Length: 168
Length: 212
Image (cartoon, rainbow over all chains, first blue to last red; front, top):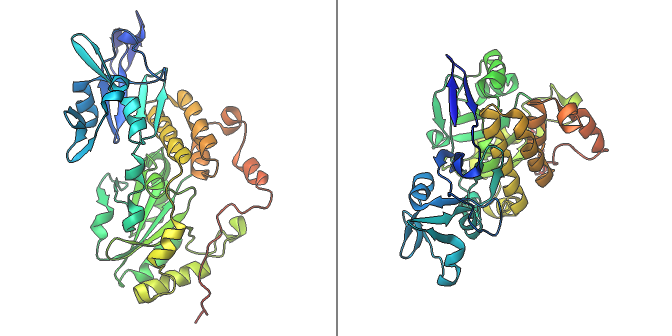
């Protein structure tokens, strides 16, 4: 990849553009991370499936592969022996993890853009629908027009009318 | 916004806040002029990723939620206009809803407008898997828009619209970022005509209360 930069403008010229050499972008929990691609395509149920190294898995998602499963903090998703081959492939010396298969396991919606090699992972269904049991208003933190951040939780102790609108 | 400001002036000393959130992928550039013109004293936030739409499973604007002092929802997603200045356009009478809001601010959980947990659980349902998928496509499209690849975002906006055809947010935001006729073969006016008398906003279910 050849990068030509003028003062404010960068032009990227693809010299060789096999998929393996192009960058890959993951958006996970709203965080954008660049990850490496396998040197050659790996077999998967879906051609858009995303294989990542175990270190990229943790970098991009904070999930780690542990003996009891794929875990983040107290949360662990066990992967049965019978299904291991769907999640892990070793191309010595690197072990690759199928993050798209994991998304299907944990009921997480995904979207993929082939041209830009971007994979988006949305919230797990259990997270998205978590407020329905408690009826606790889902939390958010967003900026005002000056960029100052405000959280819904700042208004605890008051009645709040939360109202959306749009310029369009 | 001017309507909400008037209501806020009336109710702000009654332990009441308005949090308005612009669902605008274009951010300050698109939503900013409206906020600057209205000069709200209440909190006016800008949501370039339509996060509130996704978190609360909303499909249109304006949509409001009432949240009590403990942070719990007491009325869920409903169309909410502060007054009747645009009634001629959308036909929604703001009066019963705003009367209900005043009643809740005065009476809290005793207000007939504050819904019970049982009623809320009937109204709020788990997000359908297709709608979760639609939200993912929309989020990817927004990422591409923000990265400067507006044209490449269009197929993803279209997929979001196909998967959740009830979402006016997904339609209107995408059209606004583009030339709707050229890129989507439609327009807001055409889509409203297609409703053929069906309401643009889901009808509200307000209790029958004698206005005092």
